[in-house]
Image (cartoon, rainbow over all chains, first blue to last red; front, side):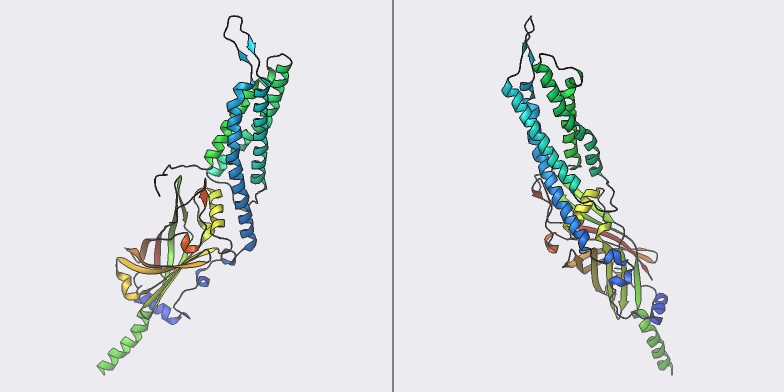
Length: 202
Length: 177
């Protein structure tokens, strides 16, 4: 702490001696809004944290069916033979069903994950800042993608069932899916950024 | 007669030396959190403080609203506020009491009482460094705080909790009032 101020300053204090020589919080000039407890705000913060923890957990779990859907996608589309006549090998029903089931599971999990983020209480006066902004902004890519991907997948399947090669907007199914997966993964990484890998440190 | 005059001068001077006040002009307080995947710091410049020296003893108080610490991520700051029960206990206060005779030393060993998150922790022999800037005095140091000192449930990411240590660096500038 600082050394004793000049005697001249001390004399000024002598004319108006403080009641006690221990400063109190009231001496510092904070407003009551700054110093008083706010139980309602604490309850909102608690609820917010609780819901966002569920959001985080569900979001990470969603990565599993999402990755599985992508992995099994090759079994859900026709394969072109490399022989001279270029025959097309249709996918098995099981392959298509597995891809569709995993995609549906992903969509349901995604919806639940989104619910916990949307329904978490907002705190007045706090504007998104930092990594959370990118996390939120990426929603504009993966949310429409998550809606479009199964619709386009269904359209593509219908066209294939009618003996047609997927065409029109349905042909974009895999591109939309990959964009959605990339944006979703980037969103998960963004909220954790910057990452320092120091698992070897206790 | 001369002796009486000296006594009178002394009597007038002693109380003047015994009474003095200091006010906090500038402050930078920074908490540090370590996780195997993250190292994060949150800083506040909104501390206020006062020091009163009387009868050879100086008492200092520094207080800062918990919600003025910013780490650069609003989501993390709100989570921090929740974890440390910052709405129930919105202020962090640090108190210390020192003999006035120790105040001129470039290094001061201080005992600090820190009130935070509804708990009070005592830190003995915290080393403070003192630098003069004209009439003002800059004090720097680190409070070796831990989550367990304040019964804070350590937040976790990917099921791994942050380290228990949450040291708080401070750099404060005092001016005579």
